Image (cartoon, rainbow, N blue to C red; front, top):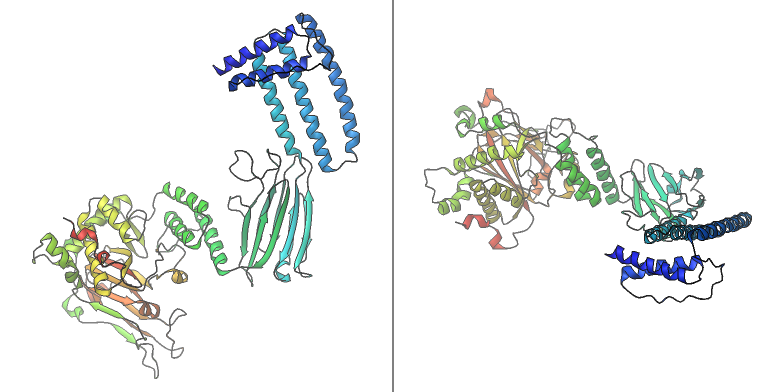
Length: 638
């Protein structure tokens, strides 16, 4: 309907022009105005002034064609004269004047083309005048938009250094020109001017030590505005090899001392101000840079952990995503990595049939009588050695049968008889949940054993509980709640993370380690650690199923407050039994000075060992925020 209205308005305007003795250019202007007013449904008053151009009598198509041809020849001659004059003036003109002249010439050419097309259409007597006029107007607008790209792109590079030595070795490559500047002479390394021909983009690189920043400047539609119309990214941008376009970047080189941070900022417009500041990198910037590099390498499959501690491409990328979130890596990079992770298949999940066959309750074992009361240990006996002495403030406890006390609220709620042992019921529901979750990838290999978690591998107790309910494992969710509630009630701490370890038989183990208590423990774990890094002050771990020995060892490394008495110091260690239903509790002081783990089972001295499940709960410092939150709500539900 709008097109029909525009066509009717144009036909009426052309008919009136034929009746009136007016110039062709004025008739074209009136027709275009009529088309626009018809589409907007408004009335535009048209005033026809006294013509100053040669008149064209629209008496017959042949006369119009002859007059149009004569006028086109005159216009071509005039345009040639103007072009020659423009070339002569451009020889001594500035880049800005050249750009202005080129703009004016392009606009004039577009106007001439539109006028010629309109006159030819009318001479043919066609009813498609509106389409021709619209096409001519679109061509004129496109030509005018292209002209605005004819500014000569320029870069003014301002380089500063907090210390003169930080800018040493600066190498700039922009627009094909290489500039090497020495920053040892002053704190300001200098200013570099670069420019290109009108309409051409300007790109280059800035190198300082191991830092590399790419620079790109290009004028776009909009008369020098910073953003292109409808563009997803600004035209002037910086990049550091991660595929993102920014206006400010911080490149880091931590390979030398002091670590270098190159902060680069770029301004808008065809004459871009680029400021480079060389300074010493902060620890947070170094960690963020390392996490960004590790994330990109994991996304491209260059950081796969091939050790036996577990992890393939999937686990590696997942670990680096968690590390990147903790270190403040850009959200765009993390989002891309998460989308890639969704398309990947976990490569470290447990074999379904083997897991279901080996987690049977009937296969659980207890130690033979001759080995039950034997506890292997070792301690340095050199004079003056204090490694085996407890540290001030450390706490370590093994509570035998604590699972029964934790199970008591659930026993009353579910009316479970006393003939059902708590540790047996708890092991059975956790084993059943593992058999169900393995099909979803919820049981995966890590450090010599398997972990049970939500497929997202989030260690939050709420995330695990929600997943258990989604897969119809309500009994296991209730069991988790009663264990969490017991720990929070007895030790007056809030459980912040949960890790369920699954040992299928005696061949599995868990290497000695310290638990990860927040961000300060990041240097104690491997590159593919998927720990939550939640702030914690203690660990409570329930042992269910078969009995296994634990290895507790006093450490004298840089993370410990203990020191060797001499180079021949043997330290201290012991291997206590952990039976089904036992609870191990230790605080952060003990965790710093000791490591713990489940060593490979010695079948010759300790007999055969079957499946075992441990539920490790990391406790945050301080009491639960609300007494009502101490025991999970699922326990009191019907």
